[in-house]
Length: 334
Image 1: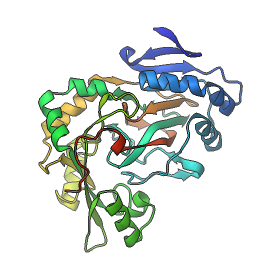
Image 2 (image 1 turned 45 degrees about the vertical axis):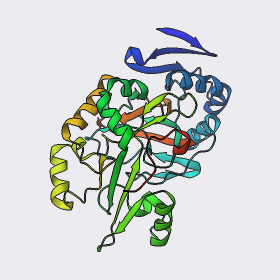
Image 3 (image 1 turned 90 degrees about the vertical axis):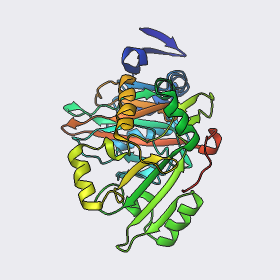
Image 4 (image 1 turned 30 degrees about the vertical axis):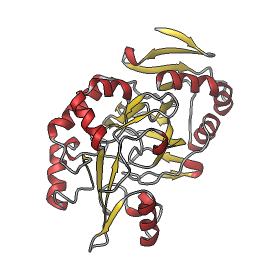
């Protein structure tokens, strides 16, 4: 199906199994094209939750950063990252460093923070030989497809993220907080409702309780907005889970999620969440030069396993405060 949205011809859409797509009539000046079509692209994102732009021919970090700066304001510095990234100037990052053979399941970027990006921007400079797509899923649709009893419990209790920082798995303390100074880390945690406990070996354990269902800050639509499944122990491959429990103990996993009252989330619940995401996923393989914009509150995204070199650059923009999204639970650290 094709239809016109503002000044751009949009193909596909969630119902077609692929994200909405726009063909860029690039003239060799990608930043100028982005500036000219900014409002039209943002209108597509507002209507559909995401858009893939093909034909823009993005080639390097400098050009990508220039395009991103034309499309959004307020590029964010990442804090509380769950995995390390390479940082480029002016709020540009590599995609998260995650094993290529392991999927990154559906999630909303930084949904456990008090201020998160309203817009995610992705640019593919090098496409893998196989796999590696960045699929998307509409969070109001996912919410409606989940069992009411389950979503009502999460609305009442929220969800709890526990983290154990170390230098081997996931983001280090310095990578997550921008510093390894204990005083600065403690001040950040107190200001952001994060309970913390220093370990004898210098490691850090944290706990934070957040809402699992929020309202979109512009449309008011209820969205399933969290990283409950992605950061849960049962989403890991069995051999990875067994190894991490053996090395760090069941209570010392690099990250894990629970119900907001502290109860464990069963493997059956995690499988259900991931299966509902999969049933509502739209995907399109990357091509070198592609650009994608994603409304981070309305639309979850993931990363499929891949083979071969893959270079995708990312920017987080237009920060949104959790307090402006009608959270269902009080922000606490319990």
